[in-house]
Length: 492
Image 1 (cartoon, rainbow, N blue to C red):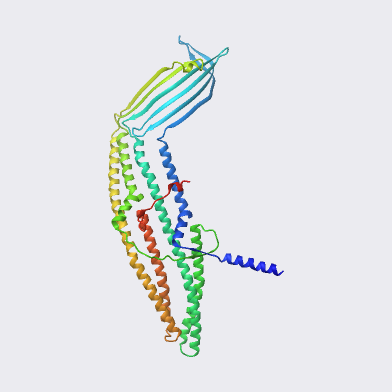
Image 2 (image 1 turned 90 degrees about the vertical axis):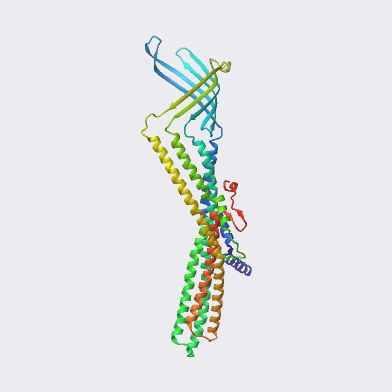
C-alpha cells in the first residue's frame, strides 16, 4: 500500500511538472517558425509553386511535342448516293472500315512564330461488298513540313521575354512575402511580450500596494497621515488587484493569437526572451537603392510593364494589316493491297500553299488600334518613371527612419533607467516615512511602468523598420549579402 501511494505521488508530481513546463522563445526563433509553418508562409509557398509550374509549362511549349494518334476502327455502314460517269445517280449501300495509326513530332519556332513537323503513319481501308471484300493500305513513310505566318504578330517572341520576368518576379515576391511574415511575427512577439511585461508589472504593483496600504493604515492609526491619503492608498491597492486580473486576461488573449499564428499545438506555458541589441549598423542610402533596383520584384515589374506595353503596340501594328501564311511539306507515300508493298518504292508528294489577307477598307480601325496602343505605351512609360522616383524616395525615407532608431532606443533605455531609479528612491523614502505624498509615489510608479513599456515599443519599431528595409531591398545589411531562396526546397 505504501508503494502504491508513493508511486501515485510520483506520477502526480510528474504530471504537474510537465503541465507547468515552460517553452522559451527568442525573437529569431519566432521569426524562423513563422516563416516556416505559419498560415501566411504556407499560402506564399503554394503561390510560388503555382508560378513555378506555370513557368515550367511555358517552357514545355517550346520543346518538341510527340503525339500518337490512332483510329481503331472507324466503321461506316450506310446507303449513299453515287454518281456514275454518264451522270446518272444511284443509291448504293456501303460498308467500310478504316484503321489508322500516326506519329507526329512538332517543334515551335519562337523566333519566327512558326512550327515545323515530322509525321509518319499508316492507314487501312476494308471495303465489304456483298460477295467479296477488298483491302487497301496507304503508307505515309515520312512527311516533313513547316507552317509559318508572315507579317503577323508573333506572341512566342514576346512571351520568351515576358514569362522569364514573371517567374523571376514570383521568386522575388515570395522572398518579400517572407519578410512580411517576419514583420507580422515581430508584431505578435512584442504584443505577447508587452502583455507578459504588463502581467509582471501588475503583480509587482499589487504586492507593493499591499505592503504600502498596510503601512498607511498603521500611520493613520498613529495620526501621521490624513484619512484622504489612506483612502487614496486603498484605492490604489484595489486598482492594482483589478489590474492583475485584467492583465492576465489580456495575456491569455495575446497568447492564443501568438500560438494560432505560429500554429503551436502544445498547451504549455510560453516565456518570451526580450531581444538585446549588442551593436548597431548604418545603412548607406546609395547601397540600399542599388540593391533594391537589383533584387526586388518592384524594380523587375517596371521592365515587365514596359515590355507588355511594347508587345501590345507590336500586336496593334501587325494584326489587321497585310497578313501572309506559308505552308510547305515534302513526303514519301505509297498505296497497295498488301502491307509489305505499302512501304516499297514510295512516291514523292509535295505541297506548297501561301495565303494572304489584305484589308481594303476597315474605316480606320487598324489605325485607331495603333494610336491607342501608342498612347497606352506613353502612359506606361510616364507611370513607370514616376513609380521609379517614388520607389527610390520610399527607400530613402525608410533608411533615414531606420538610422534614427539608434537614437530613439538610446533615449528610451535612458528614460527607463531614470524612471526606475526615481521610483525606487521615492518608494524607499515613503517606506521610511520621509515623504507621505501618495500622489508623488503614484506618479513615480506610473512613469516607471510607462518607461518600460515605451522601451519595448521602441525596440519593436527598430526591428519592424529593419525588416521593412530588408523587404524593400531584399538585402541583409547585417551580413552584407542578398536574400536568397532555395527553389528545390520549395518545390518538393
